[in-house]
Amino acid sequence: MSLARIKRIAAAAEAAGHAVIADPAKPELRDQLFHALADVVGPSFTPAGDQPTEMASLTRQARVWAQIVQERIMFARRFSGTAAGRAASDSIGLAFNIRELLGVLDSIRQAATADD
Image (cartoon, rainbow, N blue to C red; front, side, top):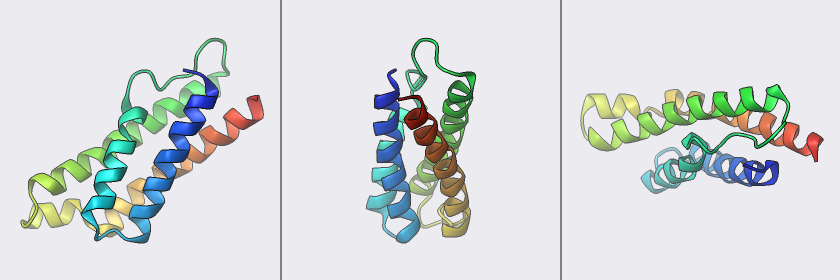
């Protein structure tokens, strides 16, 4: 995948992540984030060609964090109204996972910009 496309995907996921952190009670924002992360968790979210190993490492980290966030969102959906669902959608825990993901996505965008 080209660095420009990786940057666009990272920017979209970052925007959706910031929206959830700003208003974690809205399930529609979590759904938007879930869908925005689909491109991040996909196997094609890797740099093409001879990109630095740092970029490959960052995209792997982003995939892991994106999968964690998606799992929390799916679990909260599946068990909404139960104690387990409330724990999974806990705004503090979810925000922590999203912030970790945002840090990696920001690093990806910075590294991609440096390579442009």
